[in-house]
Length: 131
Length: 131
DNA sequence: CGGGATCCGATTAGATACTG
DNA sequence: CAGTATCTAATCGGATCCCG
Image 1 (spheres, each protein chain N blue to C red):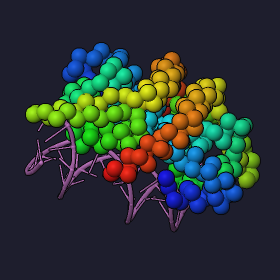
Image 2 (cartoon, chains in turn cyan, brown, purple, red; image 1 turned 90 degrees about the vertical axis):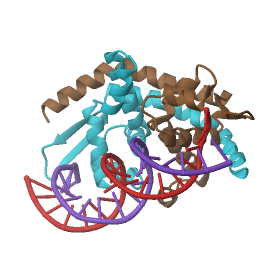
Image 3 (spheres, rainbow over the protein chains, first blue to last red; image 1 turned 180 degrees about the vertical axis):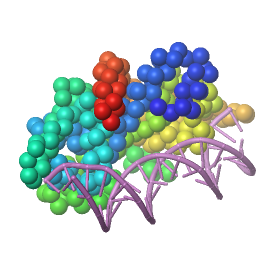
Image 4 (cartoon, helix red, strand yellow; image 1 turned 180 degrees about the horizontal axis):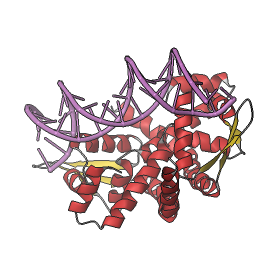
C-alpha cells in the first residue's frame, strides 16, 4: 500500500494492523473498480477458459492488460492458472472458491447499480442542466 | 462512457440499452474503487460534515481531490451540498438516501474483504516466493 | 498459443498559489 | 472558509515487436 497514507494514519494514532487492513481494503476495492477485472471474473464465472478465448470474449482488452490482470488475480488466489504441456501450448484459467466468493460479493454491488442506475442518470441530467 | 468499448460491444451484437448499463456499472464500480470515494462516504455515514472537517478527517487528501470527489458524488445524487449564506462561508455535505444505500452495499463488499484478507495476503506471500 | 519487453501518449492526482 | 487554476510527476494502458 501507499507509504504516505500509512504515515498519515499512523500519525493520527491508528493502530498498525488496522492501517494494514485499510490499505488492503482500498487495494481490493481498486481491483474491483479497475477497467477489466470484473469483466474477466464475470467471464470466468461460467467456467474455465483459455487465454485466447478470454481475449475474444472480453471486448477491447489488449494482450498486455489481459496477462497483467490475470497475473494479479492469480497472485491473490482468485483464479488458478493451468498450463498443459502440449504443442501448441494451452493455458486455462479458472476461478478458485475465493474467486467465486468475491464474484458473488461483487455481484451484489452490480445488482445495486443496475437497480439504481436510472436514479443516478436522472440526477446527472438534473445536475448538468444547472451546470 | 468509453466510445471505444461502446463500439466493440455493439459490434458484438449487444443491445444498445444493455451497452449503456455495462458502461454505467463500470463507471460506478470505478467510482467505488477510486482512492477517496469510499473514505469520504464512510466519513459522511456518521452525519453531515463541512468541507474543512472532511479535509481533516480523510487522511492525505488534497483540496483538489476533495472538491473533485465531492462534486462527482453530488452530481450522481449520492450527497447533498448545502451552502449557508454566512460569513465566513459554511458548506455542509450529507449523504442522500441513495448515498446511504450505496454505502451499505459497499459495506458488504468491505466486510467480505476484511473476512478474506488473511487468505489474500497468504496467497500473495506464497505466490511471491515462487516469483 | 500464450505471453514478456519496450516505447510512448493519455490520464491522473499532488503541490502550490490564488480568490470570492 | 471553501474552493479554483495551473503546473508537473507519476501512473496507466495501448501498440508493437519478439520469444519459447
